[in-house]
Length: 554
Image (cartoon, rainbow, N blue to C red; front, side):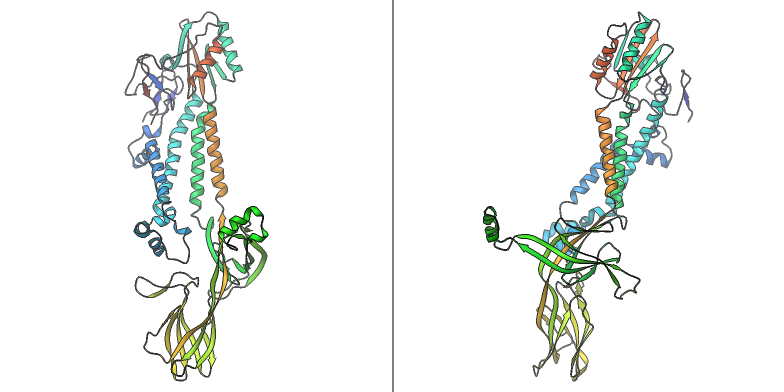
């Protein structure tokens, strides 16, 4: 495409609608109008936008698609609608870790919950299609901004002082009058400078401008939104964001989620303190008695020891741990370390720690044992003497029957432990298999001589800790700050331009602003007071001029 050379001598890029220098409407515009035509739409000053110039290649079509304001609005609507759908039911990251997702949604929400799970909405914010939608919104913001801001910046930087007469007459604020004295021109110029206008003159013509930086407010908004979206996308990058729950029983040592096995935590002791009406102020006694004595938590905390792995260990081998610190985690008093925060979330009492069994001869009812099985680290074999041994062939910490009808475990937490024991005795040297769980004792290979009988249980308190790490927060905060700067930039300032042109003994005045026309008109009147400079009148409501020819709109 050829460049467009205006009669003023300025060479404009292909697709320019109004000359960047003098504002004259270009000859290749499909709807040329006369000086008395409708007012010009000055949103982009008639600059050459790529989306309105190139339409042939695939790149052009992709660019034009994402540069459309309508497409951007629809993407925003779709992201907001999808985000709203994600709040209907609990998202995957917030459901208990000891329950299978399909079971949770079915039991908690019934058929709607099953449909919600089957459609993949339970992990909406981590789904590929939601991430793609957010990425498309970001691409739309980038392309729409570049499509407008670059040509507008060029146009505003090269705009000339002397404007085409037709351009001036088709501005919303316009006036003309015979110029009596040249000194009036200098007085008008001086008054504009006092109002902080940047004034340029050329061949007896004048251009005054201020507040140009406000034109970049919407694009600063876009930059802020793009940075916020980048921060949100970074949360899916491993190591940038962690928000996990960790159940930890008293005495238990477990790897901290999100640390890649580098840090471990031991629950030394869990403490809970409750309110007692006899020790509290009178104003609280009634509320405590209504809730029940000892049922209102005053404080609950977890005394912990933080460990760091020292050296390398083989898979399955117990790691060597080095103590880092001892501390207490309370509500609103987290443990901070290496960009991580451990928060006291909740607690439960009566968590299973050890189960005790006896090996019993069913005929003689003679008992051997007992054996105590640690539910965190059960031993593979227990020797009971007199040729009696018990082997653990399989351990299911959280037993359930899966969809295939086979025994399985929902999680590694011992909420419903079940064992497959091999009971070896002098009469059965090869052993007998027994499947034992809570209120369950099955003999899958037929009647056994020996039997495992439940003899006791030891329980402990357990603490629910939330593990958080967020390296994206500063990115999101920076984006939000930039967005608010753009809002203030576009809201509290406006771009104002005033043009004066001498023509045949007449003085023509025109002005444009992106908002607050009354204030601009008042500034012109104040500057022209007592001079022969005409006061501009508002042409918006003049018959035949209220419509607008779009010269750079979407």
